[in-house]
Length: 328
Ligand code: AMP
Image 1 (cartoon, rainbow, N blue to C red):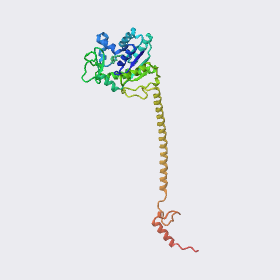
Image 2: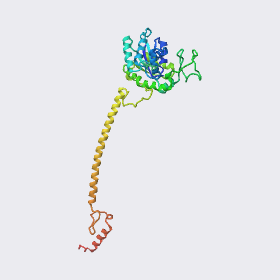
Image 3: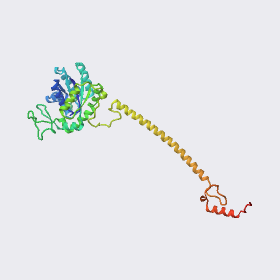
Image 4: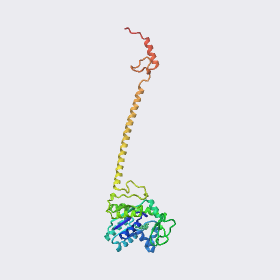
């Protein structure tokens, strides 16, 4: 088993790595633990790393790669390993690839633990650790008022980078630097996404199934975002090629629609102008017609009487009376 565990801080990588280590007898190699060990021992490297870690930032690639190289070169890692927290950016992934090629230990799979942002925050802010045996607790599940380890009675502590003000920074660093690894390993056909919420045993079962299963084609891997992007996404950014195609399609469809609309508007504009001109000439012709009948002149045949003025009708009547009757 040669696997990488990928996931945001608080997604449960460490917990699940410990279980896999027990069951499959392969070492958990945690870059965070290696760094914390260096800090605790007060080595030069540890002193350098401490401030960066406490601020929720990433320690320099060279420092972390040096620690990982040493650890993976040890005999117990020759039969397999569970990498937890490394790599954390594309540069580290490339370095790991080169190192594993050197050691002739290619990766079997990359397991992504998918957890919602609100769950991550709740887990990180509530995490308490035993400094003696390393057991991890959460204040939300501990009996009220419990402050000591159930195994050895040691007072539990909260990691400096689990303080609320640092959690936001760590999640931001994950989104910007680590999340691109999802697409990176998906393209390599190594990624397997696992729902990381629910009972620990259920998540573990999913992890095992994913670790031992055959690779899934990258096109079939669907990964949900665990937090809102920091910048507004541009059209097509971070989408699958299929989604990009559909965006392009709808864009060109919109363009065609806009073009048609423009055309319609212009032609309707033209016909409106024509209509206006026709109406104008109609009005002009109408104004040329006589509006009043001249007195003494008979109206045109068929003109309804009602339309003839009273004056005109009277004039016609008297003209008739005056005129001599024609002999029969
Ligand atoms: P973790 O225990 O994995 O959450 O790591 C704790 C802290 O150690 C991180 O917030 C980083 O400051 C540092 N760290 C762990 N792994 C790496 C890594 N691969 N690259 C850089 N910094 C790391």
